[in-house]
Length: 313
Ligand code: RIB
Ligand code: CA
Image (cartoon, rainbow, N blue to C red; front, top):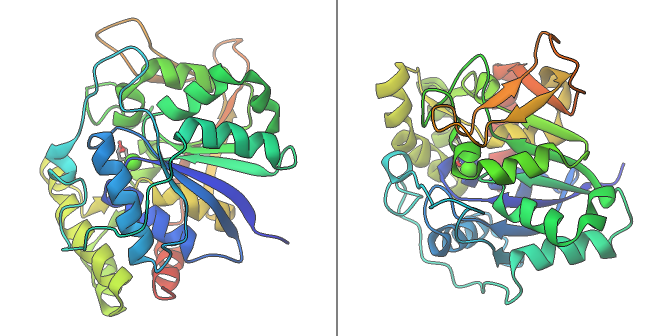
């Protein structure tokens, strides 16, 4: 089976970084056509820089990285330095990138790639706010039929919100963009907090990253050492939730995840619940199912996969 061709759309972010490392460590399963940066955890100039830092950490300065939208479609940008630090990649000391940022805008890269590759052969993997994806779908509606699948990290239902009482950060930053994506009729898989909060970097798991002894393993340990503070203080978690790596792990071993195909819609008007993902998990409405909402994973299998692949870099 040939590797799946993907575009990673990202706002690094320590967990984005680990997701990118996992993808780049898995060339038999994943071919990264490009990485598109979006404003989210930190402003765009930092997410575009951090994406290149991670590519060089993986020994892949050849990967094409594009800068995309620097703000949500119709709201002020909300960032998350309180979680990820002022650089967005606090924790390890990593060198500034020397690889170039591509000249083209990320949205143009997404559109042109989908138009040029055979239909149904490119998967989009958004790991941050959905601004780039929604902008591409709006500017070029023809690409919707060309997308193989969208596997995204975002949203929450039973787990409720992490940035407000009801909303998960990626969706909250750009609810209108998320609404456009949810209504795109593309085959969508959602990795919400319901599952990512079960992918916790406990101390033994963090020790296993560090014990790899290579740059990627040690950096992953140092990133998650930093990144866990927020969730430990707020939730009393046993470690950092590895939100975004659930997306790339799904492409490699989907069988370790489970969920339901249900209707998922996004709150885009109420200030009280702005950005909430309303998942009709129990099928109590007649709203058509539009996404596979993942609720659980085999966490040990997830970390075994992740640790083994980080060890390859
Ligand atoms: O809510 C978690 C999500 O928001 C993750 O993708 C994290 O990187 C931030 O973007
Ligand atoms: Ca992210």
